[in-house]
Amino acid sequence: MSLPPDPWSRLRALTPARIALGRAGASLPTTAVLDFAFSHARARDAVHAPFDAEAVARQVEALGLSTLIVDSAAPDRAVYLRRPDLGRRLSDESARRLAGRGKGAFDIAIVVADGLSSTAVHAHAAPLIAALKPAAEAEGRRLAPVVVARQARVALGDEVGAALGARLVLLLVGERPGLSSPDSLGAYVTFAPRAGRTDAERNCVSNIRAEGLSYEAAAFKIAWLARQALRLGLTGVSLKDESDLEALAAPGSRALE
Image 1 (cartoon, rainbow, N blue to C red):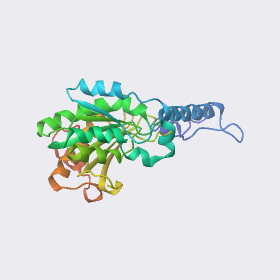
Image 2 (image 1 turned 45 degrees about the horizontal axis):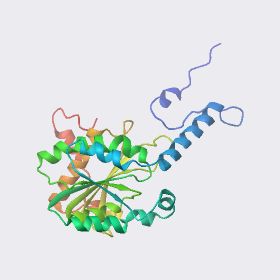
Image 3 (image 1 turned 30 degrees about the vertical axis):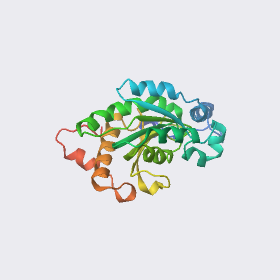
Image 4 (image 1 turned 180 degrees about the vertical axis):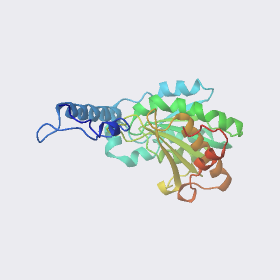
């Protein structure tokens, strides 16, 4: 007599979440245990993998954009992980270099930060910028040199944007790895960047990766947020993301697929 089909199997095919793993006595099957250990190792590797800022800068320059490489005040990865505050501000030398350039009349400054997953940044930062560039050009946005930041957290973008004189900063950062997503990229949009901005003053577009939000869909959302931020003079909790409504209103739009 054959066993009835497992009702969970269809659901498992729809999500990377760990559901319906089965059991071996009072424990999990060996395959599920090994898969968990492998995913945990991948997440740890994403946090500790060295960040190749020069390679990322070359990828961005291939798109026709100039770049600058800076460092946070965290001297290495171990300190970065123990002292989040140091990752939120520039090193003295990097701050001096940016100040020496003077402020420009820029609409948007893009900052690429390693964050907690250099794996995500290596894979997704340049393709996302490539997807964003046509909208920025079509709207006549003045872009600052793209800043590639090592040992950086989200708030570092505020100091960089202020130093460059940008009206708005877009920070792309490797998100904290999950067991099913070691390569997720996040994008943070902040109007009038300056040191001391809080997370309540930013808008975030998250989970940018092949298995999550596509480059095209993320670029559509980011461009919409940047456009509204520059028009209204605000970001964060005061700016509700209604880009989905605009996408749905466009005949034949595939922006959110």
